Length: 486
Ligand code: AMP
Ligand code: MG
Image (cartoon, rainbow, N blue to C red; front, side):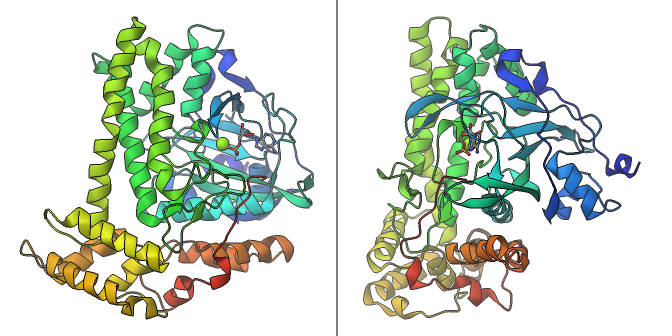
């Protein structure tokens, strides 16, 4: 009865694609669902009202034990290059329970992650553990507040069932909200599908859903490649701005919408080192901090390959056209990266030494193991912890140059600080704090630290009384490692 008041408005369009692109099935019910986290703010943003629903019923809803009216759950098929190797994949432990429309007709996939086996599970259990699902909730919501395009997190429930990894862990389900789950890998899958129409159908669907302006284009496939390239450049620049290392930039983890997706082995860089990698399995540093733009380009090449039949009937011509588009990547990225770094330093207008000034600072940080986030905080007079490194001679010389540069073009320090404050977070999800919070939640059943961290990370650009506690970097976390087994 009460459930009618929640305001679900399902309009499920993806299932209109051919059967080869998806599987229709319901979540596997779980034993004793229990609500762990619920994002009331996000629910309101998408015009859902759970205020009359108690925690017990929330747990039934977000476990999939009680599906809302109008939901029709599906697992999507997709492929992907994982660490460079092509594999057929698909939602092996996730189901989209429906597409919800808010009052402005914005469309959101509501997805359960950890909801049981699907035809794409291969030999895995279709389930997820509590720690990684809390981690995705925490980091994805922090990314949103850090002003980075991302999928969102609406809820986490515990299933009351064990999942077996290296040890026995508590099972959990995350409810993910995304503007869609169409990936580069979805196009790769459609390209090789036995059903010849799948690629064109997926393409038309994607234009309708995300880029309807392109429907009028004379060369829609080429233009789709161009916009996705722009979106990915913007996204990677955002990651670079805040020191985010995604960690598993496989083509199945790159969205066509330009949202960050799949928070597995991701982490935030502390001391500046372009080669930073956190993932335990990324031995070749394929997905290191500084390699992210290169990998984005590589993934876009795979996307372009999938689009070739739609770009031109003549494959030679299609390759030429796509190559022309991709060739623009380095120049476009460089220009947006420079623009972003100039904002981080509050540089107004252009000066021919700007790039040099930025590179000198980055090299200094690298050499002196200075913290990436805190260095920009220090320049904004917003760093509250120990500052010895900033008394170093080279840094003082660099800072003099910087102070002179920001005075150019009729600019003042106040104006520069205002620009810098918009793009330089005071607080990021520090690895040691994330780990500590997760440890309390998973080992001691104490959610207070996770909740506190989520709250603090809602305003990462604002100073609060406890800012300094979130800026400290413990020495022992120099070699932080994240794991894929989630
Ligand atoms: P990810 O590393 O989360 O991007 O997942 C890569 C692929 O493995 C996706 O197709 C997932 O659905 C699948 N996968 C990951 N973990 C599991 C699991 N426990 N059970 C079934 N499929 C999984
Ligand atoms: Mg994935």
